[in-house]
Length: 409
Image (cartoon, rainbow, N blue to C red):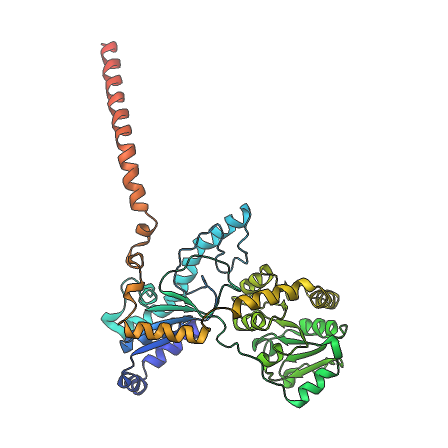
């Protein structure tokens, strides 16, 4: 976030770029809500803006929703919606810590906002910018998300990348056909895994893949592959793969993923069971959702061994319960009456045609935190109820004191 705030300062300080953007006279901006700079830029340009959040509901740096802590997990809690007593206690603790983390992030952008917006910088902090969005669009839907209340200014558009699979090129089809009915496994662990030191993980993953009958196609830059590590015959390394088309292939048996939100939604769309290996950020919470929905299982990267990996792959590909759950989630996802792309477009047009989203935003967004929590009402009731009690106690004490004084006389 420090690096993003530095980039933000450079962008807003680029007079030529800012003059160009202001001269375009945009009607509305659709911004990346995970980057606070997007809100500052939209305010600088003076345009309406729709906040597109790339993750799940209740993620970090997203707008607060009325989420009951008894059944809606807080970000980074790694909880499902089925919580016992200790889980609910953990969820409450994380909810109390969340504003602190959010404030630490916003503090890195506050100086940038003050420098470039001047009097337009919000006195209440960047939270006002978040509340100023005409609409919040979240990259999720309830095929993968836990049920919870939504507000009128929120819309779920998860699955924007999903589409019917196209035929693979001849080379890939020939490779897949070599494994017959065993099929193949798709592996993508994100772009970061090729640039960090994960030698032990690579050794165990490679050894585990060598024990399974399926072909394994792994998106990993071959030039960065450790020279001392041999690849088994059934493992194919590629620097890019057509993920949507591979997952939509009838012989795709399993998807091994770091748990990125878009990857999981593509697995849901194509009804492919998942083995989650989360590495950082929101991925830990994402794979909890996938596991809770029956889409697959999760293994921590620190716990992976070749034996555990191969046995888990065997379970996921042979136990029909996972494929059955994947098919059920796919039906839920696909049967939405309006596709996610059209859903987002229609809502943006609604905001434009209605002159903004003021009619969707409740007054609670402008209330102080103690007003939203009714703490002022609690204080009032406490005074009303305890006031007479305290007064009676004071009068009785005063009377008893006078009586004691007379006895002493």
